[in-house]
Amino acid sequence: MLAFGSAAAYYLFSDAMPNGQSVGKKLLGMSVIDERSHLNCNLYQSFMRNITTPILSIFDWIFIFFGSRKRLGDMLASTIVVRLK
Image 1 (cartoon, helix red, strand yellow):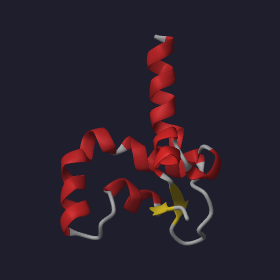
Image 2 (spheres, helix red, strand yellow):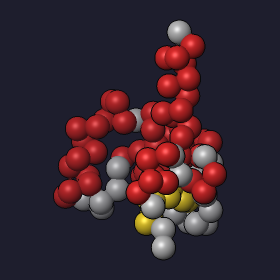
Image 3 (cartoon, helix red, strand yellow):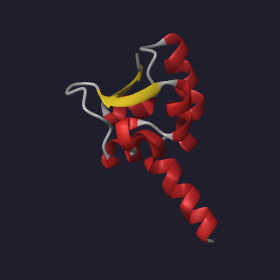
Image 4 (cartoon, one colour):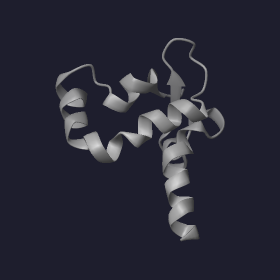
């Protein structure tokens, strides 16, 4: 039960880690930031962008490849994923 809770918490809040980077984004040199202020993703934004993934993942592919190149979760949380220099 503890492992499941820890995994769920990491999944939902991982983008609010330092510099807006989960472990995977850190390895890939990417970061999640607020699209207006360009500050790092906060806990609320991380939760909002990740809670939608299990439900709307099929629709995300449509938006990524044929729309604004943003996931629905990013639109909801007002975030963008950027490549770090």
